Every structure is written in C-alpha cells, then in structure tokens.
Length: 468
Ligand SMILES: [Zn+2]
Image (cartoon, rainbow, N blue to C red; front, side, top):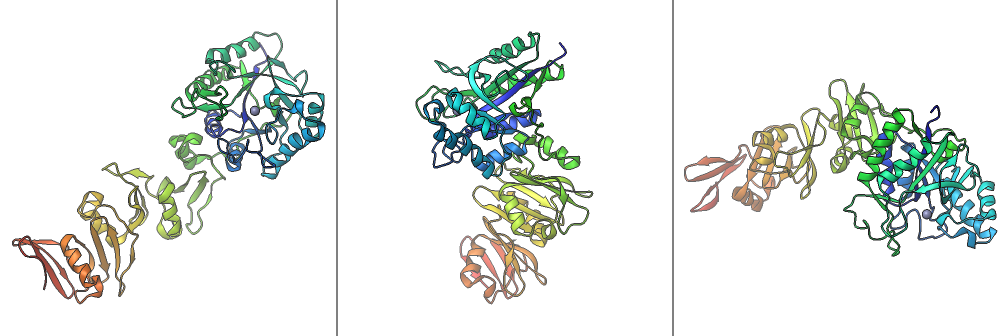
C-alpha cells in the first residue's frame, strides 16, 4: 500500500500511571495524546487528586513531545448536562490546562463517550478541532465527523479488562487491509506493572472493573508497532496532528556526550527522567557544559567526561556550591563495595557519600586522604556522618560512624576512635589541654594509644583509658 495506517496512542483521564507510560512512549520516539481531566473547579476527579497526575507531571509529558488534550473538568456525563454546564466543563477544562502553562489543547475526548449535538458544538466553539467518542471502529483521514471520532479502547469493560496485544495488532492490520488510509485511534487508561496494587481489581477505587493494561503488553505492542513504522506500514500521530495540527516534538533533545550518557542510563525512563532544557555552560567553570533533567544533572568537560549527579548527593553537592566550588563529577553515582552506600567522586579529590542511615556528606582533601588510607567505608571508621566542619583554631573534622578525623595545618589529618575517642570527648575534644591528635591510634604493649598535641591517651584491657 502507499499509505501507512495512522495510529494514535491515547490515554484518558490523566491517571497517575500515565506518567510512566509517557516516558516509555518517548523512549520509542512516539508521541501520544493524553486526554487530561483538569480537576478544575474543586473536582476530586482529575489532576492533583489521588490517583491522578500532578500538573508538573503533565508538563513533563509535554516536554517529552506528547499532546495534551482536554477531558473536561470533572468527568461528567455531558449528554445529561445543559449547554451552560457543558460549557463550564468543556471550555473550562480546556482553559484550566492553558492556565497550567500547557499548549492550548486542540483534541478532546468525551467522558464515557457521552455527547450530543450541543456538546459537540461547545467543544468546537472553544477551540477543539477534534473530539473522541468511544464508538469502536476505524476512522478515515481526515475523520468523517471530527467532533465524534471513532476509537478503540484497549480494555474491555467486562469481565476482565485489558485486551490482548493480538487484538491491538488486529485492529491495525484491519486498517492496513483497507483500500483507503485509515486511522486507528487507540486509548488506554492505566498502564501498570502486574504487581501494581490496583492490578486487575478496580479502576480508581470506584468498584468498577479495572482499566489496567500491563507495561509488558504495552511494550510488546510498541515493539511490534515500531516494526510496522520502520516497514512503512504504519505511522504514529497524535490526534491533533491527524486533524491538522503541527507535529509536537520533544522540547529538548540531549546531544553529544551528555546525550550519550543519558541514553545509556535509559533515557526518559531512566532515574534521570526527562530533559528540562538544552545543555548550557556551567557557571564558574570555563569550558564545562551541563544539562538539567527531571531528577538529576549531567556535567561534562573535556578532562572529566560526562557524569551524572542526582538525588541526595546532588542536593548536598549544590548545597556546597556545586561545580564552581566542589569540582565537576569524575564518576557517576556509584554503589559502594559493601552494597550499602552510594557515592560520587568530584574533581580535586572530593567526594560525597550517602547511605540510607547516614544521609549524604562531603569528605575531601587531607581528611578524605586519611579516610582512604584507612580503607574508606570498609575501614575502622565506616561512613561519614557529618560534612567537613570547623573545629577550633583552624582545625577541620569529619564525624564518621565509628570515630572522627581531625585535621589542622600543623598536625595533619588523624583519626580518633573507640574508647580513646570517648575519653577525649569527655575532656572536651580539641578544646581540652590535649588539643588535636597528632597520630592515628597505634598499638602499644598490652593496648592502644593516640597521641595529641598536649599529651596522650592510652587504653589497655585491664586498665581502660588513661590520660597522660
Ligand atoms: Zn475518562
């Protein structure tokens, strides 16, 4: 055939699981149409309500290149409303989305597929170019009745919900078999892992049959569809595109080394998520570039390469002034050898270590070197439990799970731990006459010792600690 079948991948209501579906679609390079119930006017159905996406999540969908369509404010049965209330719902819902900073929607879906002549007219008058029914069937290009477009629901209403992938494929094949170019307008509700609490039970807790299709089935269908697209037998378009709108494109397309790393991590469905901007120069670090993502950042320079920073480690990094003061990352976030913690190393011998129990902390310079020589987190001290902090008289220290490292220009960096640390603490740390440690703990006959500027503390099993 010389006309690929047009396939639209639609989603109704703005349910929370669709944020993930949008990222999956974006990784395939497909743009979907998300018919979002705005939740405006105090509605408990729609955006920012339990079970639904947030406004931010819908803005992310748009950054991913998807079309946001309207689906009223509160999801009423439109045929049961008078024209005034239809206008509040249809036009008001559209305006809510515009007020949320989204593109002016051109595609609309009637809740429950319920419409009448008045509802069609209201939808068209307020700026929609097309409106989707739930009448099953192929449609034409352009649709025969743009304000009542046919569709295929990816779930059946009873008794057991989601249609098999083979049905989705059959709908597309039936269009491909047609003499004219056809539109296969598919729509989903929830796309979830089979382990999802709502799986196969209910829709939005309303006792109705569930609307869940599995992520695995969704991806199986998309894999197949991608093959059809590559072979020229299908083309994926948003409903708006089918009805004359310009194609929507992902707003930001990471490129170069930053883009390579982002794609290697998994792209839109990675922990970094969606790019929020295009790469830009790192403030205060000449020649370095960076890009912001939904849940992290990637930094690049010729000498350090591209590395990501995210989560609590990113928060700590930015708290400490980011690249201009703490250096560029020289590793991605990496799991520690014991499997418990995570770390990034940064340029200039700086690190940030995180564990669930200790949080994220800076450790760098001579203190880090001392910690490294003791075997990092696997050594006697464990993980840092404080950032590097000020002691007295220019001294600096880090707290660790099982001790401390103190540093000053004249004494260097030394660890103190165990019973000797407890004794030193009881005297007032470096404020005491002992001052700062000038040695690590070392073995003596029958015990251990740490030497300080003003004396030393010994420990023996028989006599405990003694201050000398
Ligand atoms: Zn709906």
